[in-house]
Amino acid sequence: MEIGVVVVILVALGFDYVNGFHDAANSIATVVSTRVLSPRMAVAWAAFFNFAAFLVFGTHVATTIAKDVVVQDVLTIGIVFAGLVGAIGWDLLTFWFGLPTSSSHALVGGMAGAAVAAHGGHVLVTAGLRKIGVFIILSPLVGLALGMIFTIIVMWVFHRYTHVEKLNRGFRRGQLVSAAAFSLGHGANDAQKTMGIILAVLIASNHLPANSEVPLWVVLAAHTAIGLGTLSGGWRIVKTMGTKITRLQPLGGVCAESAAAATLFFTSSAGIPVSTTHTITGAIVGVGATRRLSAVRWGIAGRVVWAWILTIPGAFAISYVTSLIVRAVA
Amino acid sequence: MKGDRRALFFLMSAVAAGLLVPVAEQEHRWIVTTVAVTYVVLAIASALDAWSRARR
Image (cartoon, rainbow over all chains, first blue to last red; front, side, top):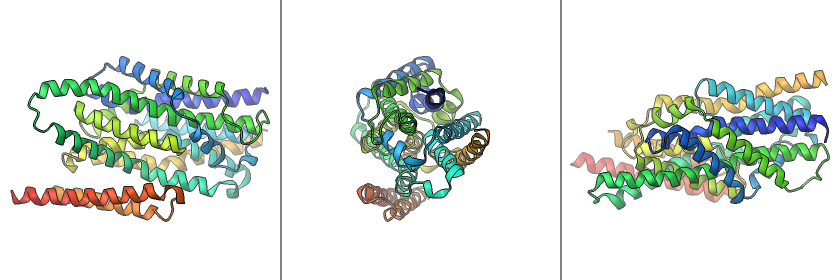
């Protein structure tokens, strides 16, 4: 395998690591903010289930990323590299500001920017980008609706239950299961995006024929990278997600994580690359909105929305410039 | 009337999801439609909740 291919695969795994690092907060924010687990235990718990996801889900999302963003024929090692630089750059920038933006959309914006810089706008796959675009808006809405519906159902079921302490203890334990389910969904959807990138590199460099399935070593490497990233944790975003959007009780934590996990399980099975960040943020807002809209801190939620809007153009711009530099150097 | 504001928020979400129906691919339209309908139901439920609280 040529050195260029190896370097880009390592950068892709680096992106996966950063993704786990950046999005660890999504998996563990509610468990930490409700004090069910210590931060150290919470990241270990999430990392384990991030890794275990490869046993449960297929690789449909990987295929979407490899084939539905940019026309496969024009993908080169340089384009994939520039795309990854844009995505990682954007992730680190938003991490610095403590904004829970989407690594997935950074990746899509990055790949698109790098390819457009090299070949022009006609190389973008309109149908694939439309699918991704629709679910950019839809995933937080689904998370929000499910978060709210789950909370209403749970409150309705337990509204006559008088042993509040006992109930809270039960939900604290329940959060271990819901956090594990969400981490499983996170690992499944996000690790597959890196698999998609590596698959694209291997096809572009003729190491695999077009329309190949994702090799097992790629699957294992991607899940290991995201698990290790999660293990490193990202505390700035934990704070925003766990306490600043709305204060959560164990009951709310269980409902938010279950809602987000259900959304991720469905979309991962259907091959739709959604943002785990968008989904859990929507679900947390949904849980907060069952009390009243003012329980949600809309100023913080608004900052998050702005970061969402800017993610694709931001990563696109960084990758566009990187792609031009790579071409000039090459 | 915070309940009304919530209903309005759900209604706006329903409109946003509804606008995505023609844009979505054929195989995913049912999901988008379900989300839009769910938000209409949530908006109605929220408005009824606000109305019953106001009566009390």
